[in-house]
Length: 174
Image 1: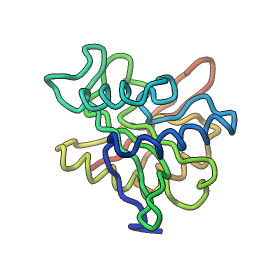
Image 2: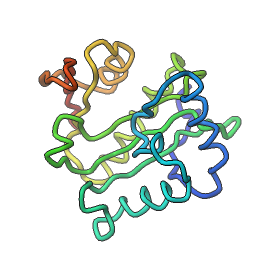
Image 3: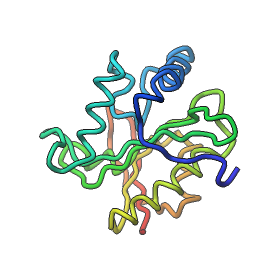
């Protein structure tokens, strides 16, 4: 599994594969694609691509957001988009409980170790961005995601209420 995926920035050339990725989530009844920077809420791929591209630069980031790198996890063997993950370089008031990253794996590819590898590779990107730590939120009952975070060095920090549900924040020192 290790090194079977690579994190790549979204591009126009990935449009059809990205739309297929989103469609699989929706077909499984999932309305939220974590880590997708609103790809689940944006009908037009080109508009979404423009938004995530602008948000990578401090000079062009949306004034209501923070500098964010968004990546597709692409399986090398068949160039299939396996997941999506984002890295928020700082946390504003809105993000303080949501953390520095979110991620999703396409439903047909879950429980194969991809999320663990995606987060591992994202930690390297965070180090290159000279970040010192990451805070990641996870719903208390999401055992699979908790294991992903813990396998990457995540230590429980605190709990909070999110839409009347308890969620936890884990910290990963870089």
